[in-house]
Image 1 (tube, rainbow, N blue to C red):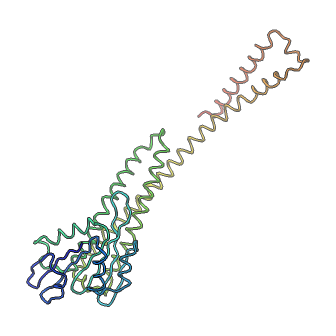
Image 2: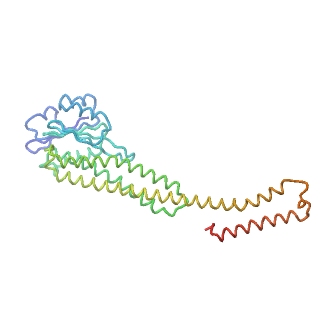
Length: 317
């Protein structure tokens, strides 16, 4: 689907005008959105807009790293949005030229829809140009990162409060590793986007964005905050992981110590039972009438004595 917004020289916003009208002198700037385009519409990137073949190729080969490429008077941007459930990166591309912006995405984009509705607001588009459209798209992309990171922070705070729940350490540890994997996915998107915004606000080649310099600096500040949050959460997952691993190790050591004590107590008892279980004929103790009870008493005395000795040594603490 192809959607078009155009601003005339009379500051009138028109929607869905024919594509060939965009070349007229009465058009001040335009926004063309390729939303899940057909093959015929994709061909217009070359036949009508005459974009560079390498940029068109990047549009068709997902998933590129967030970047900006300069082609004569046009800049080509690759941006990433985050799927709110899977946290997979979804690519949004746009071309920024001297008179307009062309966005391209093979799957529906919530951020593009929000920016589209925003620019149609009469109180917003007055006095704005297509550089402001580029800002809106990036701003919506970055704003939609925050709910995901906040949700992960809530999960970590909840897990941190379960530190005394020693009966479910394995399940909690698995959750920590899952959260750490989610943070890694977010990190792979947020960090390149931060680097991209740094290039934008420090580049001399993007004249269309110069008027929006303060806005792009604000987006960069948001990305700096996001990177700090992601790194802080990763450090928290590392601390939680180490804590739960240590707790699990201590629990395992306590179990092994108990089993070792029990085994040690039964070693002399097993030895005595083994000796008198050999059934040799010349074993005088076998002929004693109280022999069975004497041996049991000896074994009980040894077992209780060793238990008290180990307890005094602190092996059961």
